[in-house]
Amino acid sequence: MARVFSGIKPTGSVHLGNLLGALRHWVAMQDEHQAVYCVVDLHALTVPHDPDELRRATRSLAQMLVAVGIDPERSTLFVQGHLTEHTECAWVMECTSAFGELRRMTQFKDKSDGSDFVSGGLFTYPALQAADILLYDTDQVPVGEDQRQHIELARDIAVRFNGRYGDTFVVPEAVIPPAGARVMDLQYPEIKMSKSDGGEQGAILLLDDPAMIAKKFKRAVTDSETEVRFDPTSKPGVSNLLSILGAATGQSPATAAVGIERYGDLKAATAEAVISLLRPIQDRYHELAADPAETDRLLAMGADKARSIASPTLDRVRDNLGLLSR
Ligand code: ATP
Ligand code: LTN
Image (cartoon, rainbow, N blue to C red):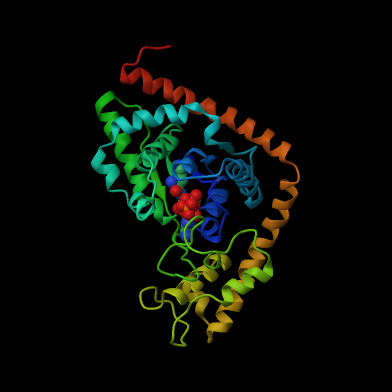
């Protein structure tokens, strides 16, 4: 069975973009793949953070992953910071990536622009991400469109390392869904819906209650025309709603538009589809959140399973690099 690996940062509340662009594909891939999924807490350290909030967000995100359907028995679900292998391998990745390559990463440019403190970790972030992926002999990485460039870099690093030091890493490929890969902000449809950027009103959080979801869709930015039509270039707001409606109901955006004449009806239909999609997830999340000790037990089990894959890979890396065995 092919191996799948992906990660998500505990940097705020999980939103609809995360679900449609990534998490629901993580769930689907568990059936026919050996799946490894990671809460990447070390990646959350690249920007200023509050320690208590990070602790809370890490556990809560793990609970949300189980609530959306990740099965910790069948798949491997773990927290990145529980394994020292990731940071050790990240150094090797940094030494295998070129400065110019890292400088070209658009996520670095986006997140560093206008910030008063830009950490070195924000710059080397994609090297840690390459370590995450390559440690698991990963074949496929399901992610949203924004991560394509990082996965390309992980591939380039794997090929380069294998060329220099002999066959060591599996060369992974990105799996980007045809629909929902780039859910846009409801207020600023030119930027992606995000946990940490953008405003409160522009993102549908998976824990928003139905009234809040309806309100956010009602206020979503459209345009001054009246026609409901899928055309992302000239109608970004309307097209984003159609993409969400399509992704939530298993149709293409253009098919989702059929029979909807007014913006108000589009907003109401999208809100309703999203509320139904989220209801069972929210119920399950609240059950899981009531038992943090059980979450911690699952995560300890996940860390053991993850280590049993990552540790032999790292031994192979060390040996091929010429580091003395310990
Ligand atoms: P942050 O805003 O803190 O950078 P984020 O919302 O982008 O976080 P991540 O943890 O970086 O979330 O991403 C988890 C997964 O969700 C990734 O696979 C990413 O590609 C996907 N994803 C994030 N935002 C969107 C979006 N707006 N549309 C589709 N997929 C998305
Ligand atoms: N950088 C990613 C999160 C991430 C990831 C990974 C995704 C960290 N490590 C490994 C896939 C595979 C992000 O910002 N969404």
